[in-house]
Amino acid sequence: MPELPEVEIVRQSLEVRVTGLKIEEVKVLTPSVARSGEFSDFREILLGKIFRAFKRRGKYLIAHLSEGISLVAHLRMTGRWVYTTPEIPVPKHTHIIFVLSNGAELRFTDIRRFGGIDIVLTDFLPQYKSLTKLGVEPLSEEFTSEYLGALVKNKKLKIKALILDQTRLAGLGNIYADEALFLAGVNPQREASTLREPEIIQLHGAIREVLEKGIANKGTSFSDYVDGEGNRGQNQLSLNVYGRYGEHCNNCGTTLAKLKIGGRTSVYCPLCQNPE
DNA sequence: CGGACGGCCTGGGAGC
DNA sequence: TGCTCCCAGGCCGTCC
Image (cartoon, rainbow, N blue to C red; front, side):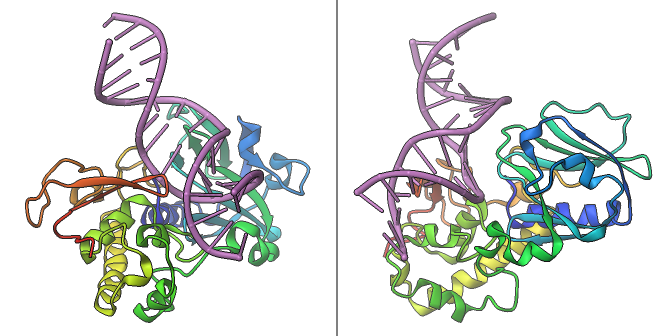
């Protein structure tokens, strides 16, 4: 499932491959995924536009086009943006194909159709609802341990739920949240307000570390994720807890446990991540 | 108003 | 072998 590192890797590959190319044709195979908003026709508004830049905010991928038009996309669980050539067969569940001026194609595929592409005026992006609600970028300078300390202060909700909340911290999903908590030695069901200062400092460092490592490893391809050129990442090979329920802790050998927090499975080490 | 929870959606795996 | 059921979880809308 694409989280901050995966979206960042896709962004980087599209930036290299697609920037400067013109949209010669748009094939909308699944109209519900191509959301034109206030514009009447998805295809028509995009014809002839040029990809100028690829940005990321949290888990959102944002493409700036010429003439003040932007695309806002979210990969959700199974979304893929792949730059490829027309000779490569179009995979099942492909919803939108951009035919580019160099003859290549940019395809949006999403098995579960949770994701989609919105057309937004570039000037309107700062007010665009799904983006304005997002919290701090965890890899920005703004996100300090003091900032995390302020986030957890007086919060009764569980620390796992807090770091997954995109309005507080934008970019962590279930994989990197579990990994960061393990690395920090913090139990996922701890009430946020009970974290002591050393734990806050540990968790802050761990969040940045797991995200940076995820990017360095070109993303986690646990199930569906591939980068902008269809390649799998390597980070799944270095996960400590996610997807390892019942296996042994890499640190102490204890059998890893799991529980549900906010509807999501959390895997953790009952010894290294003490509930106190 | 913060937090919990169901709905969206399909493929894969477990169980029978 | 093939059927059914459940699980995976990011975000949004609804409800308390």
